[in-house]
Length: 333
Image (cartoon, rainbow, N blue to C red; front, side):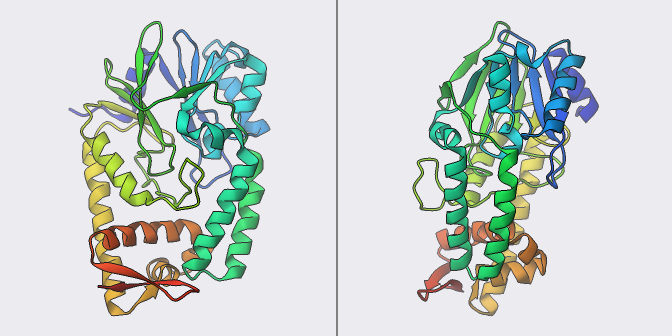
């Protein structure tokens, strides 16, 4: 019999892993940080850089009998600002070590410069896929306004895929599972069958595999959805009983949920192929055909979704990219 989310939270708490839900300014709502009451006293993710976030985190820690100063280790699951914005402040107060996947260390340390380069990259991708320049200017303005919620992160303990973090009473295995972002990292307690998953898998919404620059800083875009599907298939085979996500409730049926997500991507891929069969189209035209005006207000998100599925079609030899020097269109082979 599958556990309820409430039972999963209770089971996790008995194992010394406590969910601390912190407000964010984003549509996704609260972010889940996790306090691991062990030696070292550890916080997984921090919430965004805001006075409200800091107050809420302090209050949640206080309910467990701790203060920010008590933290000894901070683990970062991935590079998005709602998960790492308070790291710098917390380290200043506590002197905690900071652990994250080592390949992301340079990107996390150069937060402002890296965010600017990521925006440059996103604008170029949007223009090449037919999104009008005025839309890209507006989205870049929004992106810059969000940067204050983030922070640079000095990783003092770079982690390798497969590396184990040793605590007094548990071991967590580091699992690099890129897709939603290039730095997505899971932390697996095999003894208790609890997986701390960040945004790799969320129960109530599908994690968007965002087009990004690779962690090595090169400008060639990742095939985010292709990579994400590979990562999901690895996670599906794990004997996890509880998956603790970065947003929403615990997941106690991860294989079933992953199967549903993979089926959803298959359906969307076929829908996009059908649209391309009608006539060659840009990524922006495909996004508008599926989402209408949302393709303007959420242009980069919807374009990431479209390109993820056209990557699958291109890799399968069913679709090809045709570059006229200004924009890329997709046509059937």
